[in-house]
Image (cartoon, rainbow, N blue to C red; front, side, top):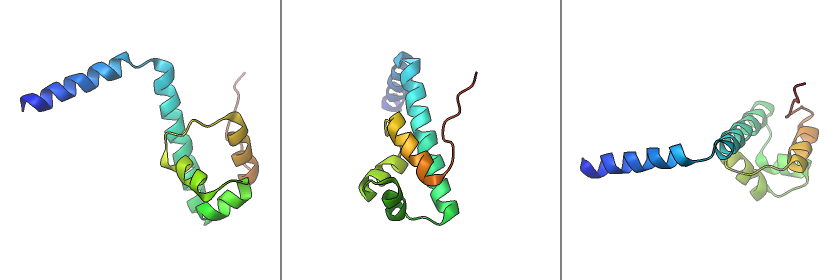
Length: 92
């Protein structure tokens, strides 16, 4: 039990010390991955079909929907164009 408590404390300390910007980056990355995966499923598109639409490899798409990918604006624009949806909305 002691080991488990120490592990939990170390995890919490690491989480507390993680910069807010990095936490947001990871959170957004996983949200985008889930959004892409759900949209592909709802449209009945395979990762292979989507990869062709975007002009990338099936492995890249698999990496995207796996979460944790650091999406560039160029990649997000390609995804939005291929799926004909707006992935990013800028608030004024």
